[in-house]
Length: 476
Image 1 (cartoon, helix red, strand yellow):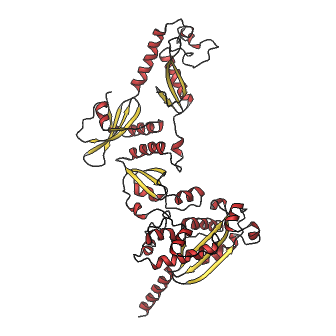
Image 2 (tube, rainbow, N blue to C red; image 1 turned 60 degrees about the vertical axis):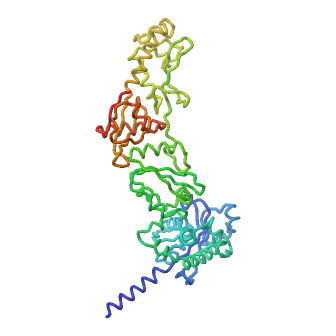
């Protein structure tokens, strides 16, 4: 009997414990936690119906408050000059928050900001969280805006002292109570479950979209409120990779801005991880999303070009890549191009002056090793010299392979195919299992052409070396 009584007491204690919420609002100097300070904090403790405790204080942020923030919040540098630093209130604040469910409007911002400053003070904040924006979207869907001001106005809650921690916390508490009363489908209960992703997702992103992501390779797109793509990513497992974006709430400006701007997700499945890598590169170049950086910058810098000069001689030259000219070969480094051209000059007896490998105002070094037959002084006819240049072009085309990488498809009735033509990435697609892969022209009927660069080419070549059984040599 005593044991049963103890269990009952424990259950009642746990239930009470689980129903204690800390409604939090902070005012800051702006920016992000690692380069900003907290100027004011308010915490309201509630059981979901009644206010149990209230905490509010100004904080010396250490950082200077800008004129813009002063005009927005009304908090001036003079007001906080003699207030306590965050480290001086960390202990009492931690005692207040440590065993509560952390609630805020756009909770990831307030939580990550406080978590960073707690860590600096020697504390590790680890609370379950609820976001009143996410709650509002699920419990009271259909509003145009879920910002604190607009949302409160829609449901008839007045905000006193807007953009002050106390005023905004009071309004958020009233909003929270209002949402709990209308939560007939127990969305909050679902959000608080241990395995629920709701606590980690961006405020404006539907959990339903996350649940619909397949565990397959592909490319995913994050969209802003207007539907514009702001980030493109690749994945071996779409569901796992997308969720990894939200598994932590770093306090950096880039991360917080990124999460705040995500409103929806779309995706394209691919048969293989390699196809996802390629499609990501293509889409980033096409869409130029704000939050992608690395692959935006990747572009082959130099190329080998052929042209005919005024005297009728075919000339080879390394130049910066020009999108309006068709290159014979491309390079990331100028030295890489010059190394190849010098090799070709020796192998095919090409004049170094006509290849721009040396200046015209000094004696042609090709005369010493018989690479040059007086071509630069027009002692050799253009027709004779051009034959050797054409041999170089033929050699390059012959050396550059044409092949297909064939792998499994999106279903059991097809196969995926990546086509390389004369050393260049042509495109990729899907073809029926019964199709005989032999000629390039027939294969192109099933292939979607894409732009190519050295990065894509490198991916395909590396894959071909690693998995030679997937490579099929083709006839042009």
